[in-house]
Image (cartoon, rainbow, N blue to C red; front, side, top):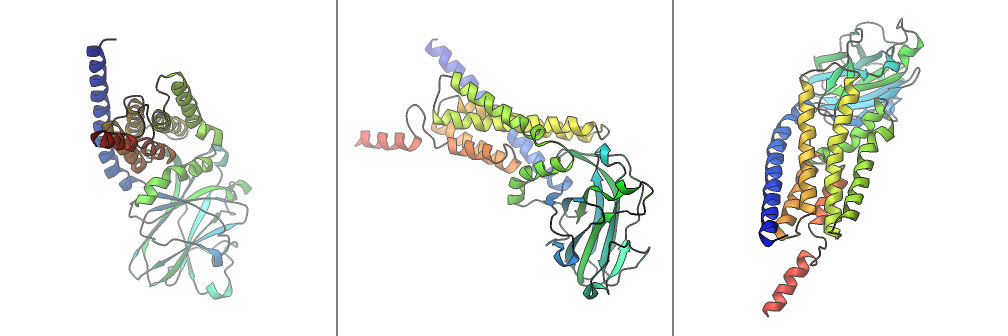
Amino acid sequence: MGKAEILNTDRVLRIAVKSSLLLSVVLLVMLSLAFPSSAHVPLLAGGNENISSAMHITDPGKSWAVYGSIEKDAVHYYSFDLTEGERIYLSIFKSADAKEKDFLPVLALLGPGLKTGEKPARQLALPREASDLNILIADGKSAANAVYEPFGPSSFIEITEINISAPKSARYYAAVYGNINSPNGPNSTIGHYGLAVGYQEEFSFSERITTPLLLISVYLWEGQSLGLILIPYLVAEIVALLFFWRGSRRTSFCLAGSLAGFLFLATSASIFTQMVFNLTRAPFGPEVYITVVIAVFHALLGVAGIRLARGDAGILQRALLAVLGTLALLAGSGLIMGPILAIAASFLLSKSGSIFGNCIARAQEKK
């Protein structure tokens, strides 16, 4: 290959990478504006079968989604502190798994000054110190069609909600249990539920990073197998190793960058897989196109990462790979490991040594 052809190839590569990065940045800005306004911070329930060990929600105004499963006659409790007049928003939903079609969870709010309605179920046997709490049972309704959530993506069935103002400044409790009086029989008391708390939908920096890992638990909550969830990532890393082994650039820079890029591609493939899976439970709607845009964004991160890793390990390429890893970290791409590998690759050895080694060598030559 002649020198002119090599230069032309490098120029095309740089243009392609820069175009991919530019489009990725634009998409990231769009997603950063859309994601917090349409999603909950996921939490996992556990060890809260008694009101004295209720799972405490530190900020009940912030939008959370707690995922749990109810066994027969069990009650899960959640606590949160509110001032008088502050808004209380709670909603209950359940898995769209056909095996749990008869499951009908009940939502109850416990606290001072509440307007009581129907008599609570026998499961809500409160201790003496909590006997003065009023109990408000959310109006139940028959399970509707499943709802498609584009940012996970996931699907669920909405059951009921409570949306009132706190009558007094105090600690309130939310209780979730199976409906023993349901005509659906004993299957109505056992199943997977989700409790949405709060109305201010926002994500902290750490939550943006850890949410993709928590989504694995949400997919398990939906009834999926761990193998189905992780297959895209396992396949992607095997392909990355094969590409690296068959390639001409067998350097630590190329290996780490390639593994990162394929993890970003795996995230895109995982999103498409989850989209198809959940569309078997929920109807197709315009929200699906949001999922497609998110998947394309992660795919662009992957393509850019692979091209940078397989190119020259110059200072510009290393800087771009570090920026790419940072973008991926904020976007939740690559299950945390992908961004770490991309950022690490910008400091790893290439054919001509590390970036710091090259700088020291040049300084010695000048002396």
